[in-house]
Length: 147
Length: 147
Image (cartoon, rainbow over all chains, first blue to last red; front, side, top):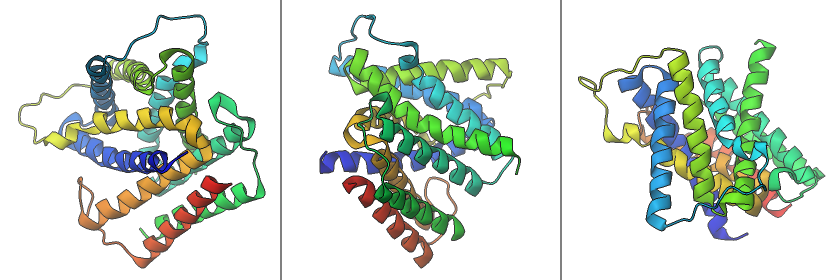
């Protein structure tokens, strides 16, 4: 693991926030319904990624027998996340949504790491990791409180 | 708050963490490339969302007379990087550090965007409380990096 990987991760977080803002504005200015703006976001993202594949000459391997059904569910997981955000936005406050999604992310991270599932390297849960979760949670709660 | 909302929200967070792992595995087992894995994920996600838009009969507004700016449409580019980064970084960083870094990136960028009122966010100057929250986050991320 190197500094580049860390920077890429941070940058991904930054992109996520900007994406939220941009798509919210798209909803306001054109789509009116958040599912439509999300569908468009996914459409342009798909096109750009396939464009990159063409431009970089990335080979598309033949479908072998090595994949299982769940390998192809990434898109469903992403779409579900969009649905949940859209649905919950009209039911509970933004801060609560942030807190719930974060709780889910951290819970999944600890479990997936502990068992080394879906290709994550095995990192057993430890006292220090729990301390790390406490700090992450404290940080987010502190910021939510300051809004 | 209804327990159903809690479950929907937490599941959303779980799906995000799962998605990076699933796409990383798709890359390892078939695509051999994170961009291709991200493209497939986005493509499937788009199909699911497009089907929902159709099923819910969400109307497609005309572009005439709207006041969209170019950056309203940038969500796809940003999302594409996010999904690509997730697939690429999952096996390198592990779930805990990946979640932590993305979170840190989100919070820091949110503080900056809020402070300057960018991307349609209302102007909200950074406060000492927010800085303290960010420091907690940094400690949490550092713990996941080293433990």
